[in-house]
Image 1 (cartoon, rainbow, N blue to C red):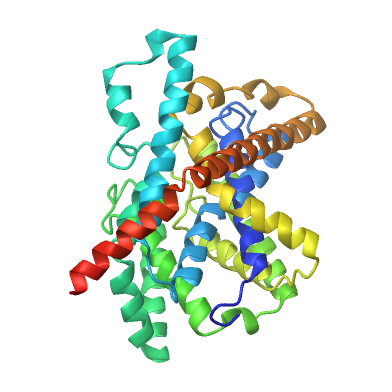
Image 2: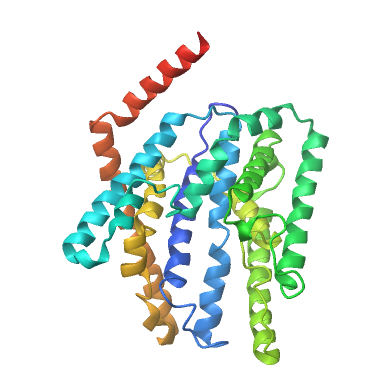
Length: 367
């Protein structure tokens, strides 16, 4: 992929990754993972789905680096993103206030307008922080020689492995987070993935690895993650010793590699069908809105929390079907609502007006 050329496989990955994120939330916050009987058929399948979907957040950050390395950050778009969060917060808060005014307090009203600083959405808080450094990171990436870049990636890999081995495998001996990665819930972690995504783009890694290898790599790393989870749980039950999930976290080597393999697989998809391209073009920009909608604190705590916990004891086929069904309902409904929001903002020319203001400010700054 060269400058200016659109890779629709990457946009398709945005949609797939968001569906996987919704799937994670249905399994986790929805109550299935916390209620399945250990080592039952439902347990194995639920944690397999969890292991396969866990790399989705990392994929989003890799996309940011892959796309952003040759792009100039636009602060007007960040402002639109902030307005998008505030818009949904206001609408959802009003809805819940009408339903039950006892659910809303003064703190909720204040946090409606401060979604970043209040950390309502951890990923977007970390993303906003990362964006402040993107011009500096991009400048560094463009000026690094390949060997220097590879040395940097090697250092990052060592950091990941060290963090996983010492903090996750031996939490009793080292119950702290020396690198402040917070298991991947941090600006620093998103920046690391941004740098890796930039490397993939700059040195055309997707041309080196074919789709079969990428698919096999994804399945293999997911398998290792899943097996390690089952072994860890068995060890905890047999010994009674508390132990963190070794590989089931964003900073895990297997989760990172699963995300990279999945990224490469989709980047190599050559989509030529104009109808499919049109569908992706329309829906991909709405994918982030799905996250903002269903992770809203009111929706998260009152609608998502425990809403499918009963499926943990259901027949296996029923559990699988309903997990995917509810994930699809949340995902599809979110896409439709977000498309309506995008249309409303376009009608009000929100982004155009902010872009003009941004342009005028930069022109004055350069005078």
